[in-house]
Structures are given as C-alpha cells and as structure tokens.
Length: 142
Image (tube, rainbow, N blue to C red; front, side, top):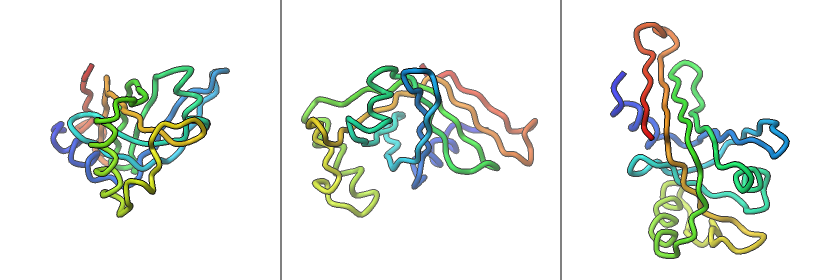
C-alpha cells in the first residue's frame, strides 16, 4: 500500500479514534475531531479531561480511523502545544475543517479549559481487510 493513500485518508477523515493509557495502565479510547497536516495530527481536548490527564502522565498514544475494512493505525507521542503563534495558526484550520469559528473551540490552554495537542507519528500500519496478505503495510516514521 502506498503511503500517499494513507495520508490522503488521514487528511480527509472526519472522526479519529485516540487511544491513551490511564495512569494505572487501563486503556482509554475516545473519538476526536482533528487535522492531519504536514505528517502530524492536531486535535484539541480539555486539560482536565480523561484524555488530557492521561497524556499529562504518559505521552504515548494511538490514532486510528473508524473503518475495520480499510484500516489505518498510527502509533506515536503527543505534546501539548503552548506556542501562541502555532496555536493561532492551527486552530483556525482545525475549526474551518468542521465549520466552526476558532473561538468556539476554546483551545487556549487555560486551566479548566481546552488545549491544542500535536500527535507525532512513529509507526503506522494499514491494510484492506479483503486482501490482508496483499495490502498489509508498515512504516517506521520516527
């Protein structure tokens, strides 16, 4: 499978699933909206949300798309974005993808509020369920 096909699906997806680990090791998976841009994944969540708390304790995560027949799974690490210029450049793109105004996302990183995060991929896998043997591909991205 060609990496450009995988990136196109990541760019065009509406909903992504984010898997994190709770401090006691239990998994936690939730759907998120996000933006795949320039080989990284941008998303927002509350600093005090389960996702936010999990990422503060362990920056490792997995992002995958919804399909079980056209599978894309990406492993990597997540960082809280604190650079105001970067936040100001990404939040309008993220909001625009979902037809929202940037201020509606409230990703300013204030305590008790939402924040912008960036997921940096390290490993990706993709396959088509109908042809697993012929399509299973793996990329080391880190």
